Structures are given as structure tokens and as C-alpha cells.
Length: 564
Image (cartoon, rainbow, N blue to C red):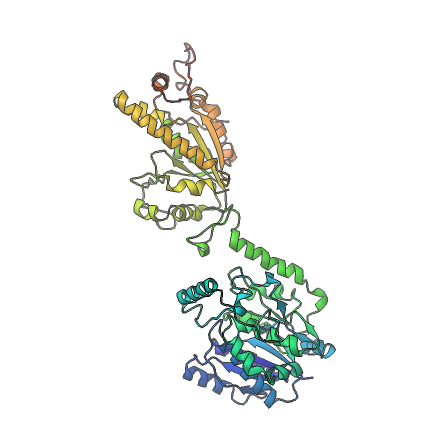
């Protein structure tokens, strides 16, 4: 029993050299292919670094391109060189330059001795299209793909669309039955020789040369012709996200890797010194298969992929920008509050919230002409400029950057119907947002701004229309923000109770148990204004009758209320 390795490498050659030395010490035969696009000086330095190392050979170099037949050609050339040079090889593993053994080579050798006639290659019929993460499935075998998906994307997409429109369909050579699977396999030398020496190989090569991503289908299909026993699985662990990009392992994944029931894993971060030192230790003990938990291990990647697609609770990711269609994601990972209408009713309300609760309060961050900062500074924490031009470019990102530095603290901000509406969609679809709205609070803006009644009617209609649109935004089926409404008449008649309801969800420590009421704007004449607007045809939900004045209390605000 002798194991041979075919290594395809194109970068970080010093790490490849580490792995080659390790395999040579384990009496393994190694054939190395270095991408022709690697600089000649770098390749020469790599050869010099391995000078004197036994059991290794270099194959003819091919310029490899992702998704093209060049990767298959490089694999065929390197495999052929391996089998001709080391005729005693019984099993061949195809690995990349970023792979590492998660179990010792001696453990792999014993496993293959017990399964000496089995080919381990993931080979799934294209009818089972669940394997493909992102991209074409059956069409990769029936259409022509002369263009590079990465370098010539526009030409690639146009040609695919044209072939679909013209109903072009290539004939699949007999007796091939298309299969796909992981690029990384472990074949017996007998099966690999049969694939390389197949009399129809030039015909098959010409067919797969026009296929898309043939490195995931060439050996997977031909193995079905020549193998007598296939275990449709790979001995190299690799996982891909929903975009088809491989997950990368770092030093802190060392313990997790042993949960896999595979013997190798990719893709390793080149800077993971601890991984390389530990996994390439020749004295490393066997890792018992009984401790492997492949289902639990796979579940972690599925959870990570789901989080990548949908986001965590209250977070969105720039990786989806600008098409963030994930649901139940927002701009903060902790709850925050937006007070709507409070600016018109109370003076210095953010300061009062800050002093009365454990929350950090901001002023009107989304005012049209400015970005209000309670500290009167030109920027917020994290060097976020208080500039409306910068804010308006990406309101969602601006709010996320505003809340991030103090993410461990409940935060609040004011919003007014005169402010920019661009942030409303973000707020409505943010599960972390708690919106507290005082209905018809805009009446106070009209009351305390000198203007003719005709102008008041015009502005009242405009604010009423804005408020209705605001409520409709939060009533949409996909809106997940919590909307709490307080009637203006209740806020005027029972200010202490209204404020208690408004801040009840905000954390408050013992040092914030009692605070005086915030100073309120003038409300005298509000009931008269509401009645006049209602008589003019506006639907104003405000009915306020002042409580009878007592000798001890002339107005509701002469004796301070407290919030319990």
C-alpha cells in the first residue's frame, strides 16, 4: 500500500513546500503541478527549496483558469506523471496547495488498506440538482462555454442566453452519464489509469473542453465507467457558501476540524501558523473516528451560510450590498428606539431621556438641512461626520455606523415628519427598532409657528398626508419593527403616564428611578386649532378638555410630575 498525491498549487508556495516535505517523510509519492501563471523566478525558488526532497516529481505546467478545462488537463498531466514515476502507488489523492491533513497520513493509509478497491469520489447524477450551490446544472453539459465566466462575464452570459433562445443542445457522448461532485477525490491507481488510458479519451476531452467547470464533472463522470466500487463521498472536507465560494479555516478552527469524518480539509488560511504547525506534526496522534460528528459539523456551516444570507438578529452585511433582500435584518444587533413627534411636544427631550434612563439619546439625526448632535460636535463616535450630504448617500449605512460604537447600550433618536423620509423603509423592516409615535404631534408645530390660518390648513394637510404614509409603511406585511402609538390628547392630559409608556421598554437602573418631567412646549389653543382644522374638513383625532384648575395648581405643569 502506497499513497500518491497530486497537488495543484498556484500561490503561497512556501506553504506547499511545507506540505510536500511532510508527505515525503511519510513515504508518500507526490506529483506537483504549479500554475504556469506563477512567475518563473518564484517557481524556480520553489524548486530550489525542495531540492533533495525524495519521492516528488514536477509535472508539465499549464496556465489554469477557474471553470475551464485547463484544471482538468493539469490534473491529467500530473496524475500521468505520478503513475509513470511511481508504479507502486495504489491510491491517488487529488488535493490543492491550500489543503492540510486533519488526520495523520498513517491513519489514512490504514483506512485505505481496509478499503483498497473502493474509489472515493463524490459523483452525483445531474438529475439530483441539489448539489449545485450557484450556477448551471444540466446546461453545463449541453451548451458551449468558450468564454471565461470570471474574465468575460458579459460575453459568457450573452452566449448562454443566445444558445437558450436558439435551443442549442450538445449531444452527450455515449456511454457517458453526466455526474458532478467535489473536485477533490481519492481514486485507486487502477481506476485512474483506466481513465487516463481510455481509448475514447481524446473524444471525451474534446467534449468536456466546451463544458462549464469540468473539474467538477470530468472524473466524476468517467469514474462511473471504469470503477467497480464507488463511495460517493470525498475524503477531503470542503464546504462552499451560497455563492459557491469555499469556507476558509483559521487557527481557532483547529478543534472543530476533528469533528469531520474526512482526512483532509481545504481551504486553509495561509497565515494560520498554528494549523500548519499542528496538522503537519509527524508525531501527531491518530484522531479517533468515533469522536467525529460530521452532521453537527456540517450543521455549523449550514448555520453560517444561513446567517450569511439572512443576517444575524438585527444585523445586515455589506457582502449583500447593494441588493440586501434578506428579511429580519436591520442596522443594530441590540434594540433601539425612535421617538416620533416628541420634539414638537417637549423641549430638550434627548437630554431628558439620557438623564432618566440608561439609554444614549440623539437629537434629530435625519433632519433635512442638518444632522443634529446633542454634544454640538462635528462628528459622532467612530469619526462619523455629522454631515447631511454624507448621511443622504446611504441612510441605512449611516444609521448602522451611528449605532455601532455604542452597540452594548440602548440608544434613542428623534424623528420628525419634517425629516428625511429615506430612512423609514429601513426602520420599518428592522426587528430591533422600537418606534414610539405621538399621533398628530405635528399640530404643535402649526400652533407655535406664527402663520395665517390658510397656511396652517395647507401645512396640516401636508403633515396629515405624511403621517398616513408613515403609518402605511409600518403596516406593510413585511414590516417587523414594533410600532407604539400614543394619542396626542393623552400625552397632553396625562403627561406622566404617557412618558412612562414611552420609555417603559428602555432599561433603567436604580439611579434613574425618578426624574422630573421634561419641559413641555406651549399647548394653549391646541384644542381650538384642532377643532378649526376638523371643521375645515381634516380628520383630526384630538379631543381635549382641560381639567378644572384648582387653587393649589393653576396649570398641569406648575407642579412637577415624576416618572416612577
